[in-house]
Length: 466
Ligand code: HEM
Image (cartoon, rainbow, N blue to C red):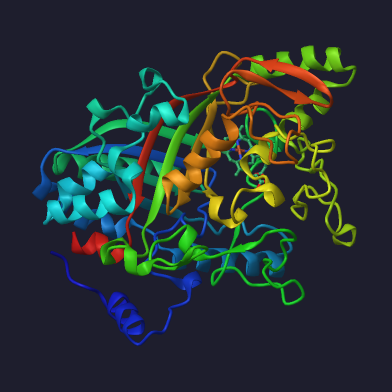
Protein backbone atom coordinates (compact mmCIF):
# COMPACT_ATOMS: atom_id res chain seq x y z
CA UNK A 1 0.00 0.00 0.00
CA UNK A 2 1.56 3.32 -1.06
CA UNK A 3 1.20 6.74 0.54
CA UNK A 4 -0.38 9.86 -0.90
CA UNK A 5 1.90 12.71 -1.94
CA UNK A 6 1.09 16.40 -1.48
CA UNK A 7 -0.55 16.87 -4.89
CA UNK A 8 -2.86 13.93 -4.29
CA UNK A 9 -3.79 15.19 -0.82
CA UNK A 10 -4.65 18.58 -2.32
CA UNK A 11 -6.65 16.85 -5.02
CA UNK A 12 -8.64 14.80 -2.52
CA UNK A 13 -9.17 17.87 -0.34
CA UNK A 14 -10.46 19.86 -3.34
CA UNK A 15 -12.81 17.03 -4.31
CA UNK A 16 -14.15 16.72 -0.77
CA UNK A 17 -15.00 20.42 -0.82
CA UNK A 18 -16.76 19.93 -4.15
CA UNK A 19 -14.16 22.00 -6.04
CA UNK A 20 -13.06 20.56 -9.35
CA UNK A 21 -9.32 20.79 -9.97
CA UNK A 22 -8.68 22.09 -13.52
CA UNK A 23 -8.23 19.16 -15.92
CA UNK A 24 -5.49 20.89 -17.91
CA UNK A 25 -3.20 20.78 -14.94
CA UNK A 26 -4.32 17.42 -13.63
CA UNK A 27 -1.58 15.52 -11.86
CA UNK A 28 -3.96 12.60 -11.48
CA UNK A 29 -4.70 11.73 -15.12
CA UNK A 30 -1.73 10.20 -16.91
CA UNK A 31 -0.22 11.85 -19.98
CA UNK A 32 -1.43 10.90 -23.51
CA UNK A 33 -5.04 10.48 -22.36
CA UNK A 34 -6.38 14.04 -22.56
CA UNK A 35 -3.09 15.70 -23.55
CA UNK A 36 -1.52 13.81 -26.49
CA UNK A 37 2.18 12.92 -26.34
CA UNK A 38 2.53 13.73 -30.05
CA UNK A 39 6.13 12.53 -30.12
CA UNK A 40 7.93 11.27 -33.22
CA UNK A 41 9.30 8.14 -31.53
CA UNK A 42 7.16 5.88 -29.33
CA UNK A 43 7.92 2.51 -27.87
CA UNK A 44 5.25 0.13 -26.60
CA UNK A 45 6.45 -2.47 -24.08
CA UNK A 46 4.04 -5.38 -23.49
CA UNK A 47 4.85 -6.93 -20.11
CA UNK A 48 3.97 -9.85 -17.83
CA UNK A 49 4.49 -9.92 -14.06
CA UNK A 50 5.73 -13.25 -12.73
CA UNK A 51 4.88 -12.39 -9.13
CA UNK A 52 2.33 -9.97 -7.66
CA UNK A 53 4.55 -8.69 -4.86
CA UNK A 54 7.53 -8.12 -7.16
CA UNK A 55 5.12 -6.54 -9.62
CA UNK A 56 4.05 -4.01 -6.99
CA UNK A 57 7.71 -3.19 -6.27
CA UNK A 58 8.24 -2.71 -10.02
CA UNK A 59 5.21 -0.41 -10.10
CA UNK A 60 6.57 1.70 -7.22
CA UNK A 61 9.79 2.21 -9.21
CA UNK A 62 7.94 2.85 -12.51
CA UNK A 63 5.77 5.60 -11.04
CA UNK A 64 8.78 7.93 -11.05
CA UNK A 65 8.95 7.66 -14.85
CA UNK A 66 5.30 8.35 -15.58
CA UNK A 67 4.08 11.67 -16.92
CA UNK A 68 0.81 13.35 -16.04
CA UNK A 69 -1.47 15.68 -18.00
CA UNK A 70 0.10 18.77 -16.39
CA UNK A 71 3.61 17.74 -17.60
CA UNK A 72 2.42 17.51 -21.20
CA UNK A 73 0.43 20.75 -20.96
CA UNK A 74 3.36 22.66 -19.37
CA UNK A 75 5.62 21.47 -22.19
CA UNK A 76 3.08 22.49 -24.84
CA UNK A 77 2.76 25.95 -23.26
CA UNK A 78 6.55 26.38 -23.22
CA UNK A 79 6.70 25.20 -26.83
CA UNK A 80 4.06 27.70 -27.96
CA UNK A 81 5.82 30.47 -26.05
CA UNK A 82 9.14 29.55 -27.70
CA UNK A 83 7.47 29.55 -31.10
CA UNK A 84 5.94 32.98 -30.49
CA UNK A 85 9.26 34.41 -29.27
CA UNK A 86 11.61 32.90 -31.86
CA UNK A 87 9.27 32.52 -34.83
CA UNK A 88 9.92 28.79 -35.24
CA UNK A 89 9.86 25.48 -33.38
CA UNK A 90 12.22 25.70 -30.37
CA UNK A 91 14.63 22.90 -31.36
CA UNK A 92 16.18 22.60 -27.91
CA UNK A 93 12.89 21.93 -26.16
CA UNK A 94 12.60 18.16 -25.99
CA UNK A 95 10.85 15.72 -23.70
CA UNK A 96 10.60 12.01 -23.00
CA UNK A 97 7.40 10.78 -21.40
CA UNK A 98 5.86 7.50 -20.35
CA UNK A 99 2.47 6.16 -19.45
CA UNK A 100 1.38 2.85 -18.04
CA UNK A 101 -1.73 0.78 -18.64
CA UNK A 102 -2.81 -2.48 -17.03
CA UNK A 103 -4.95 -5.22 -18.55
CA UNK A 104 -7.74 -6.76 -16.45
CA UNK A 105 -5.44 -9.70 -15.70
CA UNK A 106 -2.64 -7.30 -14.71
CA UNK A 107 -4.94 -5.33 -12.39
CA UNK A 108 -6.04 -8.50 -10.63
CA UNK A 109 -2.45 -9.71 -10.37
CA UNK A 110 -1.29 -6.48 -8.68
CA UNK A 111 -4.39 -5.89 -6.55
CA UNK A 112 -4.23 -6.35 -2.81
CA UNK A 113 -7.95 -7.21 -2.94
CA UNK A 114 -8.39 -9.10 -6.27
CA UNK A 115 -12.04 -10.05 -5.75
CA UNK A 116 -13.12 -6.40 -5.28
CA UNK A 117 -11.15 -5.39 -8.39
CA UNK A 118 -12.70 -8.25 -10.36
CA UNK A 119 -16.21 -7.24 -9.38
CA UNK A 120 -15.68 -3.55 -10.15
CA UNK A 121 -14.14 -4.26 -13.55
CA UNK A 122 -16.83 -6.72 -14.57
CA UNK A 123 -19.50 -4.21 -13.69
CA UNK A 124 -17.87 -1.13 -15.18
CA UNK A 125 -16.52 -2.48 -18.44
CA UNK A 126 -17.23 -6.12 -19.29
CA UNK A 127 -15.22 -5.78 -22.52
CA UNK A 128 -12.09 -4.73 -20.64
CA UNK A 129 -12.71 -7.65 -18.31
CA UNK A 130 -12.90 -10.31 -21.05
CA UNK A 131 -10.21 -8.68 -23.21
CA UNK A 132 -9.75 -8.01 -26.93
CA UNK A 133 -9.26 -11.64 -27.95
CA UNK A 134 -12.67 -12.65 -26.58
CA UNK A 135 -14.17 -9.79 -28.60
CA UNK A 136 -12.46 -10.72 -31.90
CA UNK A 137 -15.74 -11.96 -33.42
CA UNK A 138 -17.25 -8.54 -32.66
CA UNK A 139 -14.37 -6.54 -34.17
CA UNK A 140 -13.96 -8.96 -37.09
CA UNK A 141 -10.37 -10.00 -36.27
CA UNK A 142 -8.44 -13.24 -36.46
CA UNK A 143 -6.30 -13.54 -33.29
CA UNK A 144 -4.19 -16.21 -35.06
CA UNK A 145 -2.59 -13.27 -36.84
CA UNK A 146 -1.86 -11.32 -33.66
CA UNK A 147 1.67 -10.60 -32.49
CA UNK A 148 0.31 -9.45 -29.14
CA UNK A 149 -2.94 -9.80 -27.23
CA UNK A 150 -3.51 -13.56 -27.46
CA UNK A 151 -4.53 -14.90 -24.05
CA UNK A 152 -1.64 -17.36 -23.78
CA UNK A 153 0.77 -14.37 -23.79
CA UNK A 154 -0.78 -13.21 -20.51
CA UNK A 155 0.08 -9.54 -20.97
CA UNK A 156 -0.39 -7.58 -17.74
CA UNK A 157 0.93 -4.13 -18.53
CA UNK A 158 1.86 -1.84 -21.39
CA UNK A 159 4.42 0.92 -20.94
CA UNK A 160 4.37 3.56 -23.67
CA UNK A 161 7.55 5.62 -23.85
CA UNK A 162 7.41 8.67 -26.13
CA UNK A 163 10.32 10.91 -27.01
CA UNK A 164 11.50 13.63 -29.37
CA UNK A 165 14.75 11.79 -29.93
CA UNK A 166 15.71 8.16 -30.54
CA UNK A 167 18.77 8.32 -28.27
CA UNK A 168 16.62 9.21 -25.25
CA UNK A 169 14.16 6.48 -26.12
CA UNK A 170 16.99 3.95 -26.29
CA UNK A 171 18.43 5.12 -22.97
CA UNK A 172 15.05 4.71 -21.25
CA UNK A 173 14.67 1.31 -22.93
CA UNK A 174 17.97 0.14 -21.40
CA UNK A 175 17.01 1.33 -17.91
CA UNK A 176 13.53 -0.22 -18.12
CA UNK A 177 15.04 -3.52 -19.36
CA UNK A 178 17.22 -3.59 -16.22
CA UNK A 179 14.27 -2.79 -13.97
CA UNK A 180 12.16 -5.51 -15.60
CA UNK A 181 14.94 -8.11 -15.25
CA UNK A 182 15.50 -7.22 -11.63
CA UNK A 183 11.85 -7.60 -10.67
CA UNK A 184 10.79 -10.63 -12.68
CA UNK A 185 8.89 -8.68 -15.32
CA UNK A 186 8.97 -10.38 -18.73
CA UNK A 187 8.92 -8.34 -21.92
CA UNK A 188 6.48 -10.39 -24.01
CA UNK A 189 6.51 -8.12 -27.03
CA UNK A 190 7.64 -4.69 -28.15
CA UNK A 191 6.56 -2.27 -30.87
CA UNK A 192 8.22 0.85 -32.19
CA UNK A 193 6.11 3.68 -33.60
CA UNK A 194 7.76 6.39 -35.72
CA UNK A 195 6.18 9.35 -37.47
CA UNK A 196 6.95 9.20 -41.19
CA UNK A 197 9.97 11.24 -42.30
CA UNK A 198 10.23 14.53 -44.23
CA UNK A 199 7.15 15.67 -46.16
CA UNK A 200 5.25 12.56 -44.96
CA UNK A 201 5.31 13.76 -41.35
CA UNK A 202 1.79 13.70 -39.91
CA UNK A 203 0.60 11.26 -42.61
CA UNK A 204 -0.35 7.61 -42.32
CA UNK A 205 1.10 5.06 -44.77
CA UNK A 206 -1.62 5.42 -47.44
CA UNK A 207 -0.40 9.02 -47.64
CA UNK A 208 -3.26 10.89 -45.91
CA UNK A 209 -2.88 13.48 -43.19
CA UNK A 210 -4.01 11.88 -39.92
CA UNK A 211 -4.97 13.09 -36.46
CA UNK A 212 -7.12 15.99 -37.70
CA UNK A 213 -10.56 15.38 -36.23
CA UNK A 214 -10.42 14.94 -32.48
CA UNK A 215 -13.23 15.84 -30.11
CA UNK A 216 -12.78 18.94 -27.99
CA UNK A 217 -13.05 18.25 -24.24
CA UNK A 218 -15.12 20.40 -21.93
CA UNK A 219 -13.24 21.71 -18.85
CA UNK A 220 -10.01 20.89 -20.69
CA UNK A 221 -10.15 22.85 -23.95
CA UNK A 222 -11.28 26.45 -24.05
CA UNK A 223 -14.76 27.22 -25.35
CA UNK A 224 -15.22 29.63 -28.26
CA UNK A 225 -17.15 32.60 -26.76
CA UNK A 226 -18.79 33.21 -30.16
CA UNK A 227 -19.79 29.57 -30.74
CA UNK A 228 -20.92 28.01 -27.48
CA UNK A 229 -20.26 24.28 -27.34
CA UNK A 230 -17.31 24.53 -29.75
CA UNK A 231 -13.59 24.46 -29.04
CA UNK A 232 -11.84 27.82 -29.40
CA UNK A 233 -9.63 27.98 -32.50
CA UNK A 234 -10.86 24.62 -33.85
CA UNK A 235 -13.89 25.27 -36.01
CA UNK A 236 -16.23 22.31 -35.92
CA UNK A 237 -14.68 20.58 -32.91
CA UNK A 238 -17.60 20.05 -30.54
CA UNK A 239 -16.84 20.08 -26.83
CA UNK A 240 -17.58 16.64 -25.39
CA UNK A 241 -17.96 16.01 -21.66
CA UNK A 242 -14.71 14.70 -20.13
CA UNK A 243 -16.50 11.66 -18.67
CA UNK A 244 -16.60 10.20 -22.20
CA UNK A 245 -12.84 9.67 -21.91
CA UNK A 246 -12.00 9.71 -18.18
CA UNK A 247 -13.95 7.97 -15.40
CA UNK A 248 -15.49 10.00 -12.58
CA UNK A 249 -16.39 13.07 -14.66
CA UNK A 250 -19.62 14.20 -16.30
CA UNK A 251 -20.66 12.14 -19.30
CA UNK A 252 -23.11 12.88 -22.09
CA UNK A 253 -25.48 10.44 -20.36
CA UNK A 254 -25.32 12.36 -17.05
CA UNK A 255 -22.87 12.19 -14.15
CA UNK A 256 -21.85 8.56 -13.86
CA UNK A 257 -19.31 8.99 -11.12
CA UNK A 258 -21.61 7.30 -8.59
CA UNK A 259 -21.71 4.15 -10.70
CA UNK A 260 -17.96 3.94 -11.08
CA UNK A 261 -15.79 2.55 -8.30
CA UNK A 262 -13.66 5.25 -6.67
CA UNK A 263 -10.37 3.64 -7.68
CA UNK A 264 -11.30 3.91 -11.37
CA UNK A 265 -11.77 7.70 -11.17
CA UNK A 266 -9.39 9.66 -13.42
CA UNK A 267 -8.55 6.45 -15.25
CA UNK A 268 -9.24 5.86 -18.95
CA UNK A 269 -9.81 2.78 -21.08
CA UNK A 270 -7.18 2.17 -23.73
CA UNK A 271 -7.59 0.23 -26.98
CA UNK A 272 -4.35 -0.70 -28.74
CA UNK A 273 -4.46 -2.21 -32.23
CA UNK A 274 -1.61 -3.04 -34.57
CA UNK A 275 -3.07 -2.43 -38.02
CA UNK A 276 -0.90 -3.67 -40.89
CA UNK A 277 -1.44 -1.70 -44.08
CA UNK A 278 -1.08 -3.11 -47.61
CA UNK A 279 0.05 0.04 -49.37
CA UNK A 280 0.71 -1.67 -52.70
CA UNK A 281 -2.76 -3.26 -52.69
CA UNK A 282 -4.37 0.07 -51.81
CA UNK A 283 -2.58 1.90 -54.62
CA UNK A 284 -3.38 -0.81 -57.12
CA UNK A 285 -7.07 -0.67 -56.21
CA UNK A 286 -7.06 3.13 -56.55
CA UNK A 287 -5.54 2.81 -60.04
CA UNK A 288 -8.02 0.13 -61.13
CA UNK A 289 -11.02 1.98 -59.78
CA UNK A 290 -9.79 5.27 -61.25
CA UNK A 291 -9.82 3.66 -64.70
CA UNK A 292 -13.33 2.32 -64.09
CA UNK A 293 -14.60 5.70 -62.85
CA UNK A 294 -12.72 7.76 -65.41
CA UNK A 295 -10.92 9.80 -62.74
CA UNK A 296 -7.52 9.90 -61.01
CA UNK A 297 -6.25 7.56 -58.26
CA UNK A 298 -5.97 10.58 -55.94
CA UNK A 299 -9.65 11.39 -56.43
CA UNK A 300 -10.64 7.78 -55.71
CA UNK A 301 -8.50 7.85 -52.54
CA UNK A 302 -10.27 11.02 -51.40
CA UNK A 303 -13.66 9.34 -51.91
CA UNK A 304 -12.59 6.37 -49.79
CA UNK A 305 -11.29 8.51 -46.93
CA UNK A 306 -13.61 11.53 -47.18
CA UNK A 307 -10.64 13.90 -47.25
CA UNK A 308 -7.87 14.65 -49.75
CA UNK A 309 -4.33 13.56 -48.92
CA UNK A 310 -3.50 16.98 -47.45
CA UNK A 311 -6.52 16.72 -45.13
CA UNK A 312 -9.01 18.90 -47.04
CA UNK A 313 -12.48 17.42 -46.49
CA UNK A 314 -14.79 16.69 -49.43
CA UNK A 315 -17.65 18.13 -47.38
CA UNK A 316 -18.81 21.71 -47.82
CA UNK A 317 -18.13 23.91 -44.79
CA UNK A 318 -21.11 24.52 -42.53
CA UNK A 319 -19.97 28.14 -42.36
CA UNK A 320 -18.06 29.21 -45.51
CA UNK A 321 -16.75 32.27 -43.65
CA UNK A 322 -14.56 30.02 -41.50
CA UNK A 323 -12.09 29.26 -44.29
CA UNK A 324 -11.11 26.15 -46.22
CA UNK A 325 -7.89 24.95 -44.56
CA UNK A 326 -6.78 21.30 -44.57
CA UNK A 327 -7.57 20.89 -40.87
CA UNK A 328 -11.19 21.92 -41.41
CA UNK A 329 -13.79 20.22 -39.30
CA UNK A 330 -16.77 22.51 -39.56
CA UNK A 331 -19.03 20.15 -41.49
CA UNK A 332 -21.66 17.65 -40.41
CA UNK A 333 -22.96 16.08 -43.70
CA UNK A 334 -26.48 17.37 -42.90
CA UNK A 335 -26.50 19.00 -46.36
CA UNK A 336 -25.41 15.71 -47.98
CA UNK A 337 -27.91 13.01 -46.93
CA UNK A 338 -27.19 10.76 -49.93
CA UNK A 339 -23.40 10.98 -49.74
CA UNK A 340 -23.00 12.86 -53.02
CA UNK A 341 -20.06 14.92 -51.73
CA UNK A 342 -18.72 12.64 -49.00
CA UNK A 343 -19.75 9.05 -49.78
CA UNK A 344 -21.58 7.42 -46.88
CA UNK A 345 -18.98 4.63 -46.90
CA UNK A 346 -15.97 7.00 -46.70
CA UNK A 347 -13.79 6.25 -43.67
CA UNK A 348 -14.36 9.56 -41.88
CA UNK A 349 -18.13 9.35 -42.41
CA UNK A 350 -18.34 5.72 -41.27
CA UNK A 351 -16.39 6.42 -38.09
CA UNK A 352 -18.06 9.78 -37.39
CA UNK A 353 -21.37 10.24 -39.22
CA UNK A 354 -21.76 13.57 -37.39
CA UNK A 355 -25.37 14.82 -37.94
CA UNK A 356 -26.46 11.25 -38.74
CA UNK A 357 -25.09 9.60 -35.61
CA UNK A 358 -27.51 7.35 -33.79
CA UNK A 359 -28.01 8.92 -30.30
CA UNK A 360 -25.86 11.94 -29.41
CA UNK A 361 -22.78 12.09 -31.67
CA UNK A 362 -20.63 12.91 -28.64
CA UNK A 363 -21.41 9.53 -27.03
CA UNK A 364 -19.57 7.64 -29.76
CA UNK A 365 -16.34 9.66 -29.88
CA UNK A 366 -12.87 8.37 -29.07
CA UNK A 367 -9.55 10.12 -28.54
CA UNK A 368 -7.08 8.81 -31.15
CA UNK A 369 -3.41 8.61 -30.20
CA UNK A 370 -2.02 6.40 -32.97
CA UNK A 371 1.40 6.49 -34.63
CA UNK A 372 2.69 4.71 -37.77
CA UNK A 373 5.12 1.80 -37.61
CA UNK A 374 7.48 0.59 -40.31
CA UNK A 375 9.30 2.57 -43.03
CA UNK A 376 7.51 4.43 -45.83
CA UNK A 377 6.71 2.24 -48.84
CA UNK A 378 9.19 4.18 -51.02
CA UNK A 379 12.03 3.38 -48.61
CA UNK A 380 11.45 -0.39 -48.44
CA UNK A 381 8.46 -1.78 -50.37
CA UNK A 382 8.82 -5.25 -48.81
CA UNK A 383 8.86 -4.21 -45.13
CA UNK A 384 5.76 -4.51 -42.98
CA UNK A 385 4.10 -1.22 -42.11
CA UNK A 386 0.94 0.14 -40.57
CA UNK A 387 -0.62 2.06 -37.76
CA UNK A 388 -0.28 1.46 -34.03
CA UNK A 389 -3.80 2.59 -33.32
CA UNK A 390 -4.37 3.77 -29.75
CA UNK A 391 -7.73 5.09 -28.55
CA UNK A 392 -9.17 6.29 -25.24
CA UNK A 393 -12.77 6.09 -24.05
CA UNK A 394 -14.87 5.09 -21.02
CA UNK A 395 -16.90 2.36 -22.72
CA UNK A 396 -15.16 -0.01 -25.11
CA UNK A 397 -18.48 -1.38 -26.34
CA UNK A 398 -20.27 1.94 -26.85
CA UNK A 399 -17.37 3.90 -28.29
CA UNK A 400 -14.48 2.04 -30.00
CA UNK A 401 -16.32 -1.23 -30.72
CA UNK A 402 -19.43 0.63 -31.80
CA UNK A 403 -17.46 2.53 -34.45
CA UNK A 404 -15.82 -0.66 -35.66
CA UNK A 405 -18.75 -3.09 -35.52
CA UNK A 406 -21.98 -1.12 -35.99
CA UNK A 407 -20.58 1.45 -38.40
CA UNK A 408 -17.36 0.44 -40.19
CA UNK A 409 -17.93 -3.32 -40.62
CA UNK A 410 -21.65 -3.01 -41.27
CA UNK A 411 -22.47 -2.79 -45.02
CA UNK A 412 -25.98 -1.50 -44.22
CA UNK A 413 -24.99 1.50 -42.10
CA UNK A 414 -25.12 4.68 -44.14
CA UNK A 415 -24.68 7.65 -41.81
CA UNK A 416 -27.08 9.44 -44.17
CA UNK A 417 -30.71 9.37 -45.24
CA UNK A 418 -32.55 6.05 -45.02
CA UNK A 419 -31.57 3.96 -48.02
CA UNK A 420 -28.57 6.13 -48.97
CA UNK A 421 -25.96 4.12 -50.91
CA UNK A 422 -23.26 2.74 -48.60
CA UNK A 423 -21.12 -0.37 -47.91
CA UNK A 424 -18.27 -1.38 -45.62
CA UNK A 425 -15.54 1.07 -44.57
CA UNK A 426 -12.83 0.61 -47.25
CA UNK A 427 -10.05 1.28 -44.71
CA UNK A 428 -11.02 -0.74 -41.64
CA UNK A 429 -14.17 -2.66 -42.61
CA UNK A 430 -14.02 -6.32 -43.62
CA UNK A 431 -13.60 -7.50 -47.21
CA UNK A 432 -16.45 -6.05 -49.14
CA UNK A 433 -17.35 -3.10 -51.21
CA UNK A 434 -19.29 0.10 -51.28
CA UNK A 435 -20.95 2.56 -53.58
CA UNK A 436 -18.80 5.57 -54.46
CA UNK A 437 -19.77 8.31 -56.87
CA UNK A 438 -22.64 6.19 -58.23
CA UNK A 439 -20.46 3.13 -58.91
CA UNK A 440 -20.05 -0.07 -56.89
CA UNK A 441 -16.42 -0.71 -55.98
CA UNK A 442 -15.18 -4.00 -54.53
CA UNK A 443 -12.21 -4.19 -52.14
CA UNK A 444 -9.97 -6.79 -50.62
CA UNK A 445 -8.77 -5.97 -47.06
CA UNK A 446 -6.04 -3.35 -47.12
CA UNK A 447 -5.75 -3.27 -43.31
CA UNK A 448 -5.34 -6.39 -41.17
CA UNK A 449 -5.29 -6.46 -37.39
CA UNK A 450 -2.01 -8.00 -36.26
CA UNK A 451 -2.28 -7.31 -32.53
CA UNK A 452 -4.95 -6.02 -30.14
CA UNK A 453 -5.29 -5.29 -26.45
CA UNK A 454 -7.76 -3.63 -24.06
CA UNK A 455 -6.33 -2.00 -20.93
CA UNK A 456 -6.92 0.65 -18.26
CA UNK A 457 -4.68 3.70 -17.80
CA UNK A 458 -5.23 4.15 -14.04
CA UNK A 459 -4.96 7.45 -12.20
CA UNK A 460 -1.71 8.22 -10.36
CA UNK A 461 -3.40 7.77 -6.96
CA UNK A 462 -4.67 4.36 -7.93
CA UNK A 463 -1.21 3.30 -9.11
CA UNK A 464 0.25 4.45 -5.78
CA UNK A 465 -2.39 2.60 -3.80
CA UNK A 466 -2.02 -0.72 -5.63
C1 HEM B 1 -9.99 9.69 -39.27
C2 HEM B 1 -6.81 6.77 -41.48
C3 HEM B 1 -8.03 3.20 -38.41
C4 HEM B 1 -11.45 5.98 -36.49
C5 HEM B 1 -9.00 9.21 -40.12
C6 HEM B 1 -8.37 9.98 -41.17
C7 HEM B 1 -7.47 9.16 -41.77
C8 HEM B 1 -7.55 7.87 -41.13
C9 HEM B 1 -6.55 9.51 -42.94
C10 HEM B 1 -8.67 11.44 -41.54
C11 HEM B 1 -7.88 12.42 -40.74
C12 HEM B 1 -8.40 12.73 -39.37
O1 HEM B 1 -9.51 13.23 -39.21
O2 HEM B 1 -7.66 12.45 -38.42
C13 HEM B 1 -6.87 5.55 -40.82
C14 HEM B 1 -6.06 4.41 -41.18
C15 HEM B 1 -6.39 3.40 -40.31
C16 HEM B 1 -7.43 3.92 -39.43
C17 HEM B 1 -5.06 4.36 -42.32
C18 HEM B 1 -5.86 2.01 -40.20
C19 HEM B 1 -4.69 1.65 -40.65
C20 HEM B 1 -9.09 3.62 -37.66
C21 HEM B 1 -9.82 2.82 -36.68
C22 HEM B 1 -10.80 3.60 -36.17
C23 HEM B 1 -10.67 4.90 -36.79
C24 HEM B 1 -9.51 1.36 -36.31
C25 HEM B 1 -11.84 3.27 -35.12
C26 HEM B 1 -12.52 2.14 -35.13
C27 HEM B 1 -11.30 7.23 -37.05
C28 HEM B 1 -12.06 8.38 -36.62
C29 HEM B 1 -11.65 9.43 -37.43
C30 HEM B 1 -10.63 8.92 -38.33
C31 HEM B 1 -13.09 8.44 -35.49
C32 HEM B 1 -12.16 10.87 -37.38
C33 HEM B 1 -13.41 11.01 -38.21
C34 HEM B 1 -13.95 12.42 -38.11
O3 HEM B 1 -14.26 12.83 -36.99
O4 HEM B 1 -14.01 13.10 -39.13
N1 HEM B 1 -8.51 7.94 -40.13
N2 HEM B 1 -7.68 5.22 -39.78
N3 HEM B 1 -9.64 4.87 -37.70
N4 HEM B 1 -10.45 7.59 -38.08
FE1 HEM B 1 -9.13 6.37 -38.96
